[in-house]
Length: 193
Length: 227
Length: 189
Image (cartoon, rainbow over all chains, first blue to last red; front, side, top):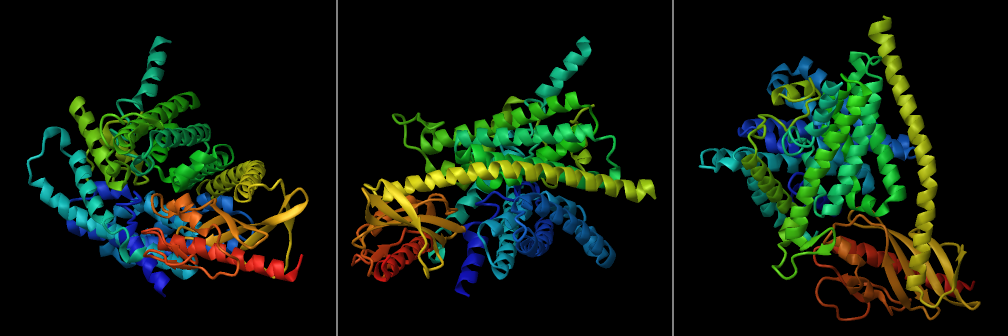
């Protein structure tokens, strides 16, 4: 039990996907300054990563490993993720149209998000059990969302400031991200992890 | 004759300067930040990604006329993932040091937006020859960007370049540069310098940094891509 | 029908088949190279933990802890001077491979950490002699424990600050080797 909690806390804070492992940077940098969109994106990611972590774990454990086909994992995982995102999109469109409209454009983006494939690969590398895999996936996505939401708030503030021309746009965003990353870096060593 | 030569040259240099995937199009940012703790790793990743890009551009260009639009995306994914896995295996066997350094970011080349974007934007619409040039150009641009990032971080953060001590007599290294925050910082400053020096501003996308599986929209927004 | 369903499916299937075939081929070629190199590295590690040995012979004792992946008798001029163990243990980032050398008196001669996925700058420090050196001289009858503050006895291993899980994993691995050497030496071989 203790190990599961440690995995979760580490995934959210100590080795935050975005701020420490650089997975999922694209949406992180480009996300709108509105916190509501950040939350929406985060929610979608949490759902997809948790689901994909589970499915890829099952496929790896019961299909790839027994048949010595582990070298196919990259291909299989990414195709599964692409299919999953497509499925989620279709289901959402049909049964939760308002949510679909709100998230709409973010869903296809999730397929090429390093975070999703990254989570699946890390789970395999660390040889987690199914429960650990699900918790890790979920917690990593929560960490991602946390970073995203925090950051959208930071960006909101920056917008109203006077920024030198060369730094406008992407550069100042990156410098701000650096500062948030430093803050999270302080979590190293938390709980003796 | 002269005209198509000029065109070939422009395709090649496009990826290095005008549409540098990392510094201008803001694609492939994950590995850019993750593996540039040392200049050598940056070069390694750049070359690995170029290899995948080359392979996928060639294959996709070759089969572009027989792939129905409906399955185009799964086909591209499969091809790119295939080359990524090959590179992964080759590195593991022949360059184990680089393999260990780059770690999980090697298989993540498959979701590197650059590769998918070029498949969609260029290789699916152009002949093999041009696609090769495009791949080489973009790959070179990517590698150069990684080299710049890696050099900045290694020199400032560890005092060495390619493992050779450089700043020993001058100042103590700022270790933070080779830690995650340093990655963001270095990238920010590098892009700021580029923005200052160039006329074209870096595209400030409203939504994510690129791939939405419909990279036509991405390229159109950038006034980029091939003709 | 042909154009909307059959052709796309066929093309996709063909592409997958070709690529999978190519991968299977590359895999078979590289697998051997990787295996050979790993074996060479392991041989090198064995020599490092058991200095003075001129050859190693793999033995297959029964009933060893599951963590032990291989046991080698270390020979110097036809005398067994000790044993070297290949141990696998689960660290923070996944599997860790250890090479543990124990001499004929039952004392640890060295510990080398091989493949691992520990955090650079933290768990990866376990590779350094500052940490692994703690195991040298430890007796086979010991029970090791990991402590965070300064150690008060030889059987206490001081953990690396910020890498407790890694430290514990290595200690458990060495413990498995110690337990094994007791079994081997008591059971006669």
